[in-house]
Length: 376
Image (cartoon, rainbow, N blue to C red; front, side, top):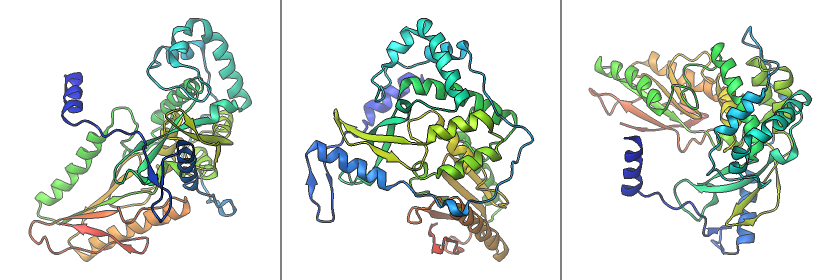
């Protein structure tokens, strides 16, 4: 049924092609149609998104778990299983090694790969080739001539991704066993999805509305969330989660000295340094982001659920006290974002006001000194 449904959706709602054709380069609306200039302009834009971390005022942090993960044992069985799971249609990274080659030769290469992975982990050093990424710009929505409307997807070494996958599985086992990732997070987690995210929030909201209470839902949108995560602060979050020792050292090196280039139809840009963020398209990136954003709802009173960076805040909004609670929680979230160098796109942050009895009566809420637009 699932395959039939997907075929139907693709037939009835064909996706817009993601290939890049042309886009504006300046305020005069000049168009680039030279592919070399195009890929370099794209890479310049993606590089400008990176944030420069303020390391002079790093926030204090306390380890909030009695457990810790200091080392990982990588076995040949781990490597064989990861090689067997490789999807042969995945794109290769800058090293040109195809996944089908690794998968078909797994019985031959599993032992030397295991030794390489073990050595990399124990030394806390990631081969430089594994830290190089070919960037594919994937169109999201809006004006196709605007590079801001493209998501940079990193295509990295398949060999490096195999090691990432092994580490990721063991990190998830540790985090789940110690209940470190909060239940409010539904993204990139076993047994959770967009549907569980929706149902959890829907249950509370409808219950309050059925009791004839006004209920506000605030949708928060981060600017370039995955691209701007500052690395030193991320390492502090790993420490707070109990991820220490050789594991933390390896991840630190994995984040350091990364480079990327944009590739469009075989045309490559110059290499650019990556100063922040967790690579979109990597295996470890999503998990590291979940750890980074995990404590955004610390001490909040309102209902808050997340799907990766997509965050909803909800609460009863029919009294002054209720309004103060909602505003207090938004203030706490704003303080968190300021401390951890994450920015909200206030133009995309919205409030939906649900009040059957008085739909025109609503309470103003403010995020980072900006009143949020509301919809009844």
